[in-house]
Length: 209
Ligand SMILES: N[C@@H](CCC(=O)N[C@@H](CS)C(=O)NCC(=O)O)C(=O)O
Image 1 (spheres, rainbow, N blue to C red):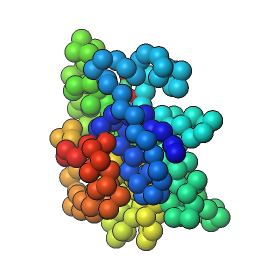
Image 2: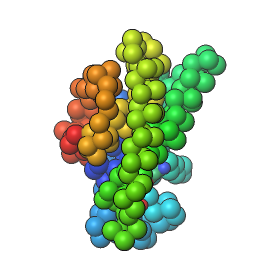
Image 3: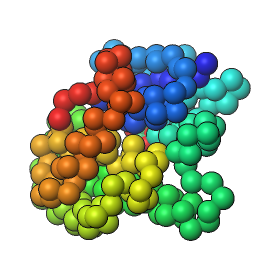
Image 4: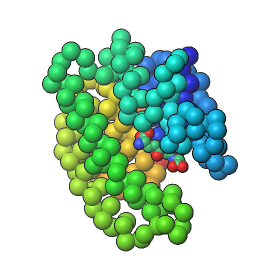
């Protein structure tokens, strides 16, 4: 059984959702951020960066949420949650994964950090407008891509949908407008998937938003 270290509302949400999509047995180990459990041993020996998610699968330790989500999809390949064989589809999967973490999540996380996550004395209010503009540009691009498509790669759900929808869920939680009916309805559709609901019922992921 795989072990996933995380905290509800953290990037471990996307991994738990991915594990549910893959119908993989897992044990969720919740770290208490308030007491700084993630910055102490034994967790630091698992991820010296002190961040979640981290996944243990036998002797293998993986960090970085998008890498873990893709690993889960590849390991449970019978569900075809990560493209195999078709080079163009693989490239599209990689392209959108990179876009989501570097173009969409990055300004959103800047907003989160400077609104509430960083210690108050580190926050820079002037960051917020710039990050909101950058987020709006990326969100508009994503909306253009999803217009007329059911899923990120067209007609088939893949793990890149987990990353996209989880990031849109963050935007909702941070009260960052999506300004797009396409994105709103896509996020709603993804969040009513049985696997995401199972994760929510287990209490390991955020349902706010
Ligand atoms: N790029 C990493 C980011 C991981 C990350 O920043 N995790 C946050 C929770 S969402 C964390 O553990 N923060 C604790 C801290 O920085 O002290 C990923 O995608 O997994």
